[in-house]
Length: 211
Image (cartoon, rainbow, N blue to C red; front, side, top):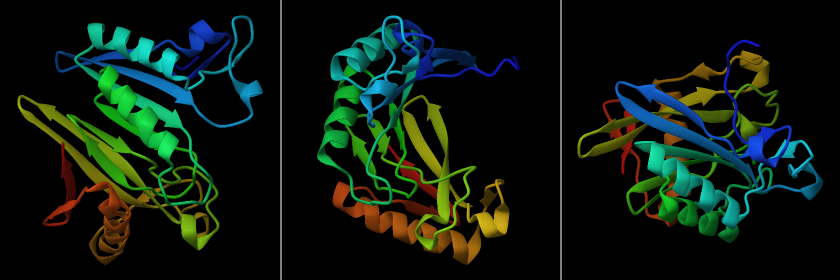
């Protein structure tokens, strides 16, 4: 083992629900992960390995517990229809329930394309960051994001780092982009985020969403 923590899966349901907890600059940060994709046979059971099911009762209970131990809680959801940019209603319901339970940040993945960003109460939801280390071959899935989160007293900020993930150009090594290429990606993401009432600020080429 290389000492890499994981979340959202395990040899049984109890292990799949466990959080990863880190202390960074004196603050405790908890990570949890869940799946809301089919088939349900992939879900972990009492004596069956698999993924942590994104059932409300389960993730609300886990987030509430994590909130008691951590200063910040970050939750990942594997969800959404592949190749579609629109946010589905069940995703918005789950994200808001998670934030109501104590999550600060929701990070979604699975659709292979970027989806919009939503601010809700004191939290933020990234419905999909797109692909990362993946053999992205189609032009609709050639961009992705990394997110750098900044937490300080009275200030929360998400810095968005656009990526080129087009396999023909980068292989399995996502490449940060800047300038015109970054601006095009961020313009597209702003269009996706507008229905969610979120605007990405361009601060001299640094793309930021306060929350």
